[in-house]
Length: 84
Image (tube, rainbow, N blue to C red; front, side, top):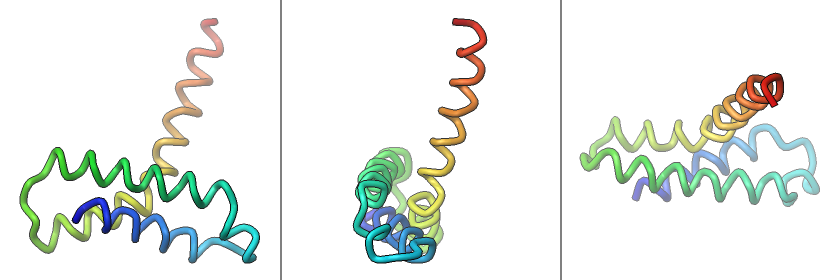
């Protein structure tokens, strides 16, 4: 169930921020939905309580998860780019 909530959060994010139909049916939307599903699986693995707060947090994780992961990768890239 958390996977569904995370994908719904990712889809809501894309619906809220897409400016055109082409942007909505792009590769970025597909990537966002897949990463949202992966975040839902991780959330389900970490939390077993299927109550109201965890469902909402799963939706929020799907909404914000991709931005969080992109920020981490960008910072690590800058950090390791200087070393390598």
